[in-house]
Image (cartoon, rainbow, N blue to C red; front, side):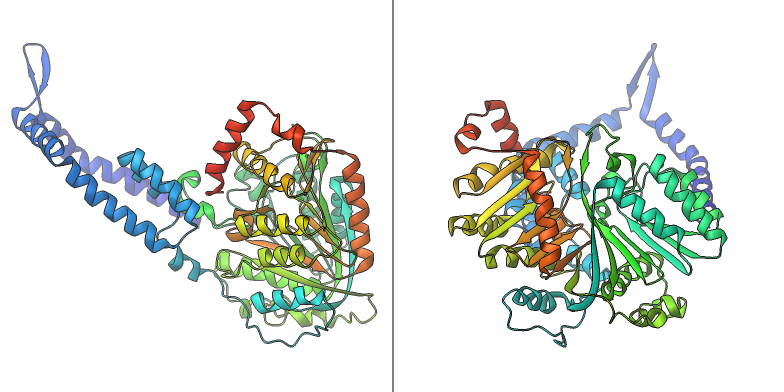
Length: 526
């Protein structure tokens, strides 16, 4: 259908150009004069140009004043981050005309409050969950109040470290699917591991297993049409999330689906930091890829499934109640009537956030973990541009004597966000935060450990885009055993990292400080 629509649009455009061509030719013949072997403009056209120049010359300040008022009003009505407002004002003032064009192309959306209504609303926050007076559950109660995330008791959580372990577990689970496979990723690549997973899906589809695949239009920008068509031709439903034309110049590119979710037969699910691509196996230019994923069973599987189905229905426009009953959003919690009572007690919450989340729930969860930590708060994030409130919380925790450690990459995968992150190091080091630069390769995990009984792992980076704009999902787990497993991996990562020293850091080259200052300006737009 889409191919036919595109063909019709192209034909209509060609027909329009052909039909309009006589008018264009007539205008050029009237506007241009060929005399004595020279081509010149008609006196009437010259007079119009001179009049326009005269108006600009004598009324430029008046035009600029009106321009400034209109733009200032637009920015004021957006109610955005003051840092972003200041940055855009600089652009608009110092690059008057071009700045306005840039603002309309890639700047904040002046209809953002309207656009957000197109995303689903947060769930009702009726407190029916078994929170106790245990201090760690204060975090859970906060998350429930912000997003309606239930506290789920019976679960099995298996920590998966790096690509080999993760993809091996995923492929094994996909091959055992009996009823359906639902998966969504920010990035899917047509490379060795991408094709291996595609081939598994094709084989499973032959057995009649229902498969739906959702990938982000920008994250998977390089995914080939052939790859997608192969899935569709095999009966697999496959869609890109919020597809856009001229993607790098359209505002819709801001609302990206950064989630990584696989749900199989309502029995098993996967989520975490890994996308589908060879680089996540350490085969890319960054070398060894350090990441964390999780394999899940229990009550949490249905919650991740709800997130997938919401995203699917948002993209396709399908009514969830009309999807196969066993797969519908409304009946998801009763999928195949699975009894989870035999599973271990591992309390956790599945928390989602996106552009419509007024509370920025995952950010609230991070903030709560940091501020409630008594002995330690360990963080791994590929990008450290968390915004003022989280920066203050991290610094305050360290100043209060909490063991605050942050692992970040020593190498960059995104130029500007890398330098924006480095700009925050000095402030945190002065507060007593221990910053570790991972040197074995590139670290991409999004995980936190608080004290000895609370941890978090998922898709959300500690940067403003992930925390406030992207579609993300994060697990908040209240369990000593899982927390200890993550802590043990932290210890290994510390050994593979270089701890920064404040005195050493202040002596870094001037050119690095210049790049960091540039990154600081950019960070307001991250």
